[in-house]
Length: 327
Ligand code: PBG
Image (cartoon, rainbow, N blue to C red; front, side):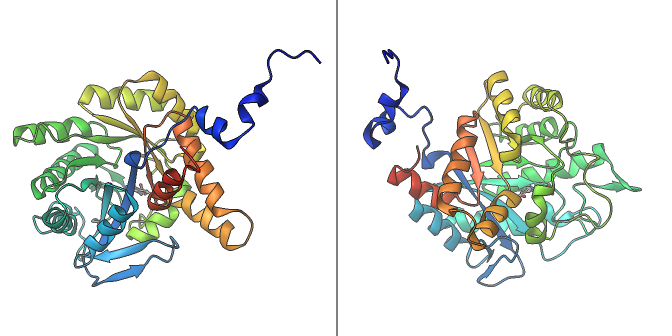
């Protein structure tokens, strides 16, 4: 055979394979989700997410210190409030769970980057992501409470807010209230293409945020759709989003690729609870090599075009990157 091109030449050793990698990962692009429970003291394992914990306000810095030790410098905070009501008023309370957690973190670790999830579903007694009018979530009334919530997070010291509710116009509403209060430098990471996905199941048990009736299909996106994701991103950019997000990740790699190609903004992907729980369950059953599946899954999200990743495996991935197993 007189082959001129032999692609195997660049696969012959670990050194040359590492030289020729097309996708580079860094611990700097990882974001770790932290669940803070107002009613908890100490740390409690989350049943639906093996290996993850709920943290009390007294121990949220333990979660932060575990991140820092692993080389992960960014988190996204989720709150489990002590009180819920129909409008989710604990979401924007000055001494709400997330607001207190931010202050506790910033007091001890001012440089640790804190993003907050802005949504109503953990705070409403019906579990929907906004204010109900009959059986549907009223878009425009919800914008007001989302904006107040985002403002209260930034006032408490959050570095960035990430609205995950999927109401129309929320990015503009949040941008306006932040600017009006002198926080024009606080960035917004918009959950732009957030699908109505079964992959959020373990999160909803962890956050106590499952809707008490119906589902979220009236506001989250239909998994059949692709162009709609581009439209949502375009609207979020017009409204002032700084970072776009696609969620979930693994079943939506096509959407990640399209959004990465179509827009210049940094793109985040969220590898959600169901993706993590499936991997953990398969590994616990002895069916897969957890470490390699974790690495390959994360790698595929970056190869698809994401610039950053929210993942329950952030700490383990940072170690894998440092070892050179990926990235
Ligand atoms: C809040 C929110 C959800 C997730 C992130 N923010 C749940 C939902 O929309 O039902 C899911 C995250 C995960 O599954 O890991 N709305």
